[in-house]
Image: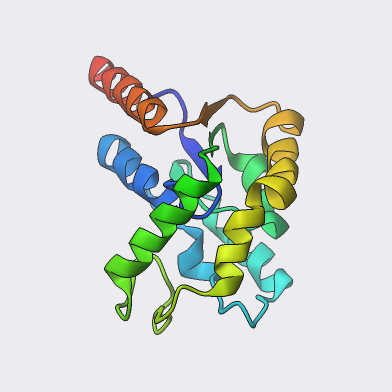
Length: 177
């Protein structure tokens, strides 16, 4: 693939983590799950200066796949990203997938969460975030990442789009070798 630093954005439950893992299997780029570094309980806020400082460190590599939104450090990732994948799945689908992930990992340590952060309930604040994502958060994310950045991008609307993207990248990778 011609792109070396891939940024994956979208609603919780849209499939950012799943897609990033699939891309990592094809491209073998370092994979960075932002939740691993920055997720805190809904009752706490992460120190913005820490987030920005850590993000500057994370984007230094020549190749990476970074998945996660974290608007307070989006500008840093956009400076280094050379390709953006924007997951724009229906809200109902995102909510369903987020709930299914919760059921599968309830009471267990997730690989993409900070040590000791274990979900025991499907948090109402998280549900609300997903339900409000397209109306409140997605417009700003789309404006900054797609409209202002002038970076090449792909918008994913469904599973078929994901499969087409993965096939194209796999084909490009095999053709290159």
